[in-house]
Length: 84
Image (cartoon, rainbow, N blue to C red; front, side, top):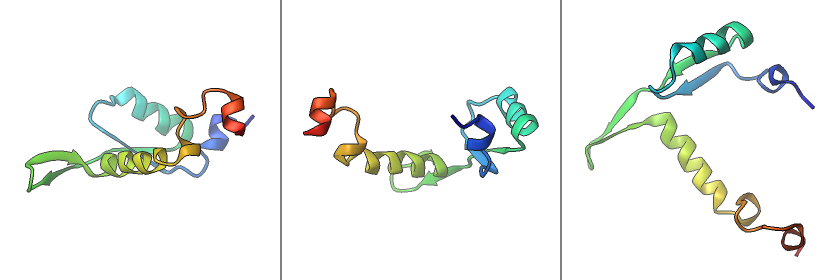
């Protein structure tokens, strides 16, 4: 099994929202050399809602991925159903 450092080897920047504190940022920087940045707010003028630009991209990507049957965990409850 790969270690965390091997899995994070290509990661250089992690975007987070304002709920992450300095401990998380310090841990990633000291242990893995990863820079942590808070994503900036973007004002959507049509609805007057503030959203995080990067957060929207991630949430939208997961929504697209979950639309596919094999990527959605809710459909295959047993191995028999998965093999069907």
